[in-house]
Image: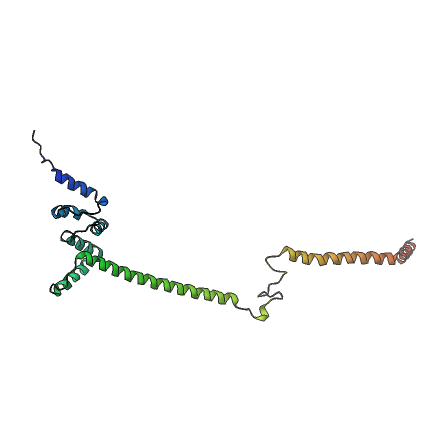
Length: 211
């Protein structure tokens, strides 16, 4: 019975198997260029970088167009065309692979980004130091003597109208009152004892008058 589809060759199945498992592929030394032309275009940027870094033989005849595609995708068509124009203007004296151009551009871009981040970090540190300096000046500023209270605080506040009243300060105010009351009581009874006779005489005279 004839089939509507031509059966796949063993080679095609092997190529497809490699494409499906490119994340596990390291080096491709010894693989024919014609097969690599079918396999490597399916690589991601990370996969292609790993394979070329681990492979000894030169893969640029296959991968140069792939790196050009990655370059254009990462840095834009306008910049890619500018690079092509410069290489043509050199008359062939200057020739780089797109892999080299991609690496150089990435490193340069990273260097620019690092400088920008460093500049931003320095600016942030300067602003932070300035803010801390202002806070220190504000905390160490001494209020005018006319507004300072007896205990060294600022403003008209005192112990009597303070929002926070320490138990020790409360006790310090209560103790003198207790002592004063005790002295008053003692003085009162001493006065009564000393004038007891006069008090009784005055009471008797008052009773006689009423009678």
